Image (tube, rainbow, N blue to C red):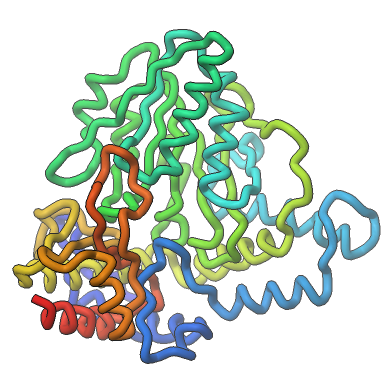
Length: 409
């Protein structure tokens, strides 16, 4: 397949891109039973949870009807198969993340991103920090990437270890991290930095490679990849981070599963504390198949498709005076040279409450999220409507959404 043309700043040439990928996308869309069963509806809430392709549904059915057993608890055939499945899934995650040194890294299964981040904060971070150390927290990102680190600060204080939480600096105009200010903020006591790969409200790629340059070679970087895994390529060989945490349900697997990948090269070895209990074996099986499906579909092409649809939406919205689009204003036009939104577009109507707008849109067949999106204390305080896209969405859905939004101006 010919690679779609990209301009020198990385913004896709929208019409050419959508045409070139249209047949590929149509074939993939047909693999989602819930989507094809409801052609009158447009599911535009994939940042909350992604729909599941038939391959994942088949894996769940096959596992539960042929192999269902606990892992690491028995020696009979079904138990052995399940134990092997779980270990193979760890290796599958390493391969999906392009792990350059899989013999040293660790993969721990969780119920999702929130539990994964809390596990790091509760069981690992205290062993890294000493009295007077500093950590950097992204206070305008998702609450799941804020609360665990503040809990760790309180936990350490009860033990007589007092650390300083430094808010991650942001660029007000774009919503991106302010990497220049971060360079000035970071010092020899900066031991840990929490960051998001893709912002869950503004849709921006947060340029994680610049964080390493800003904080130096020794600080640990923990990456919330909930909005990037399954939406674009994620390579830990290229990203010099120490943890990658994500949710399976946002990567087309079942709810209730996720993973922590740990590089194991900075700080103490990552070993979750306490008795782990029974793993979510069917969820893990679904996750391995979802990663297979995403690799076959091509995460790079999925990213190109969703970026193109988001650009189509921002280009249309900017022409409607009744709406305010959140995030970088330089990237709204289809021919803009600024970095594009990664499949997430969030906006407000100047006169209609976001909750009411969400109900209106659903009455026309559009399923969107309309609230404050779990953003931290330094984020947006007024509700908004978020459209989040995946490979099963189409340009026609975007055009129909814009047509309805235009009638509300």
